[in-house]
Every structure is written in structure tokens, then in C-alpha cells.
Amino acid sequence: MKYFTKNDEIFAFDDEQLHLVTDDMTEIDADELSNRLAPSKSELQAQVWERIKQKRHDNARGGVYIKSIGKWFHNDDPTRAQYLAMQIMPKLPDDLMWKTMDGSFIRLTKEILMQVAMTMMTQEQSDFANAERHRQLMLKAENPLEYDYSSGWSAVYGDKEHSND
Image 1 (cartoon, one colour):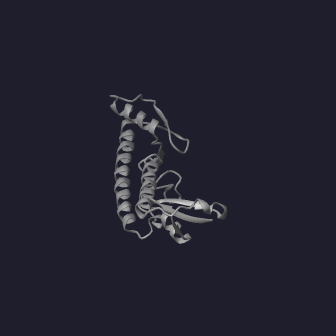
Image 2 (image 1 turned 90 degrees about the vertical axis):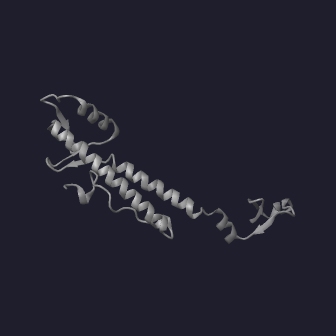
Image 3 (image 1 turned 135 degrees about the vertical axis):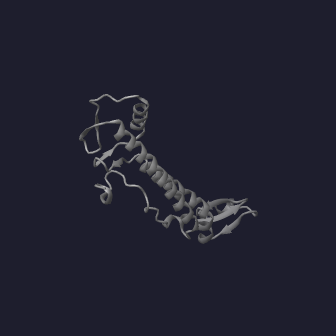
């Protein structure tokens, strides 16, 4: 297979097709082909930035630990809507039992609900700042795909190092 360029387009011809090559085409070798096909550093940076943002998004829905009662609470989108609805209620039902991430139930009070909301907000702000920190460091990395953005995130349910914070 031989490779040619014309007007920044790349053409590939096998030996039987070489008669199709025109005078305005330039032959390129395998190294040049690789260079032309390889993503640019800015494209690689954009890929890694999307992964960092996805990590931030996943963290914001990976559970929230309430230290005062030693329980993890769901914080996926449907549950967030429920928390918001309950926050604006003047009073929660006295016997409102809420399922935590370990499958056990607790009596949910306005105080616990406020702790959940405040912890979610604090962790999301922390993870937002962490994502921005990683973005800046990744942009300085020689090879963005090798940049390790795994440090500094809030705990999520199931993390071995954070399972019982």
C-alpha cells in the first residue's frame, strides 16, 4: 500500500491502483501518515478534559456520607429531586423512614436532610475545584493521555479507602 496526499486529503493505493495517482499528488511514507492521522495535543487534552468532567459528574452521584449517623445516602438525580421537595416542606412526616445505600433504614428528619444537602453541596464544590485543578495540570502535561487525575476527589460509596469515613 502506498499513501499520497492532495489538498490535505490522504489517499491509499495498492500496487494495482497506482495508475490512479495524479501529478498533483505527493507520496508520503508511513511516519508522515502516522503524524497526519494522529490526534493533535489539543484534541488529546479535550478527550482527557471530558473524562475529568465525567469523573466529577459520577462523583456527584456516587453517594454522600453523613458522619453524624454513619450512613451513606443516595444522591442520584431522582433522589436529589426528592430531597429538594422535602426541603421545602414545612415539616416531614414523623415516621418517614429512608433507605440508605447499605440497604438499612433510618428515620429521616429535617436535620439529617439538611446535613445531606450541605454535604452534597460542599463535596460538589470541592470536586468542581479539583476538576479545574486537574484540568490545569493536564494542560501542562507532555502527554495528556498519561495524566493521572485520580487524586483529590470526594469519597463515593464503595470506595475501599472511604467506605467507612
